[in-house]
Amino acid sequence: MNSGKTPPELSLSPVAQARGTLRLPGSKSISNRMLLLAALAEGETQLNALLDADDVRYMREALTQLGVRLEALGEDNWRVYGCGGRFPESKADLFLGNAGTAVRPLTAVLSVLGGDYRIHGVARMHERPIGDLVEALRALHCRVDYIEKTGYPPLRIAPRDVGFSLPPRGGGCPEGAGEGESQNPPLQGGKIPSPSRGGLGWGWVSKDEFSASPSPPTPLQQGEKGVAPFPETVAIRGDVSSQFLSALLMALPLIDGDGTTHTEVVLTTPLISRPYVKITTHLMARFGINVEEPDSQRFRVPRGVRYRSPGTLTVESDASSASYFLAAGVLGGGPVRVTGVGRHSIQGDVAFAEVLHAQGAKITYGDDFIEAQRGAAFKGGEIDCLTIPDAAMTLAITALSAQTPTTLVNIGSWRVKETDRIHAMATELAKLGARVESGDDWLQVYPTECPATTLRHAEIDTYDDHRMAMCFSLVSLLGTAVTIRDPGCVAKTFPGYFEAFEKLLRL
Image 1 (cartoon, rainbow, N blue to C red):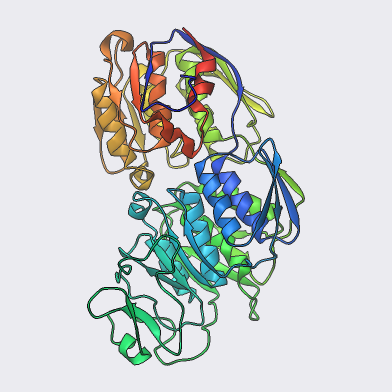
Image 2: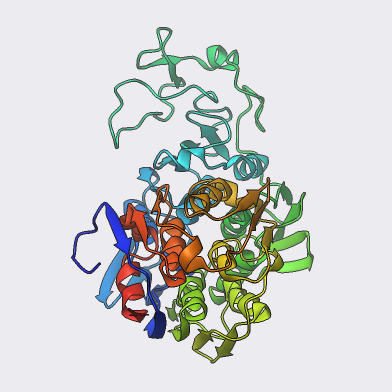
């Protein structure tokens, strides 16, 4: 496994035991939130133990394009020179891969600030919904349009003083526009860009011609001048992705006061993955912005105030990544200890350890560590995964060693992640010979009497999803060889995962 360049396939032999101690890389969710808030803040911020992985690199590169100065200090430590609430560059073409923790918050922040921006990513990112966030931003009179398919990236953001959509929704991009070229130039000579009559390139049409386009009504009616004020209340759904709410919360303090001290966000549906929103509000508080929660469906965010640097912050180790190693401690006897995250973590996925404990594992907590090892016979049952959607994937593997079937419920958000994870997990488990059933928001895995003899070797497709690769590496601890296709996909959040996993194994 330790050969330098990642091979197209990685074969893992059956393993007898896993034990040891390791420090995990930083949390992706915390790293990208800290980077963005530090960039928006007044003053310099030192971020220690920042995750060095693809998703965070996309955020760093985007901030650099926006004019933010980032200084590498060595050992995953960075200094961010804050811009005081407004980015120096008001025009940029931002490619963000498949990083939802970069696409969603940057969309919100750039829309509120205004400018000429294009946000896009890999093909899968363009299949992940963003419509609920865009509709909330439009309700705030921000100028956001879909370049291709309504409800999904890529997106075009325009200045707020443009009183009409630019370009029409579903209008597409001009043929021949190269990477980094503006595919929707700003207003020129009182005219706006529009696809030419033949559909080739861009032509210029008058405002009157544009008003006849199929684009929907906008907050500013055609012909009106000026900028519509930000409303005091905005609604958003909470049942598709908590990242939409987090993105909105981080952007709202950038709104000018206009005589109003707060903006109230109202959830129109129940919120999933609430612990991730708690991470957001906790970090906003570290940068001087306190978000009030009058009740479970409302958030009050100060407006017309600036983020302030807290000086130095250290990124917690990733609790989602911890799930694989804690599960390894249970399946492989253990003990396995992960450091950098402990009983006081701000990450909701530390609750994964509590689930393991309820199923029979022996769990020990410290201020800076969590340790897991085999305990009583492992139980199955129904597990509500609403607050631990990422770590819950690991439970689909540990379920193979349980005494009774395990049903994971409230996992509907899996379908809009890096891949449709319910489908992917059910498909790949079946390749091993496991019995699996699934529905819109649930997955049931039946245990095997003797995994080492019942399960069969399989080549696991990872769907360009880092968590699929990491989850299925645990099959080797069930006494079955497994081959992981495209193991390099772990670079999204944990480039050194397989090397770290190997260090714990006792063949």
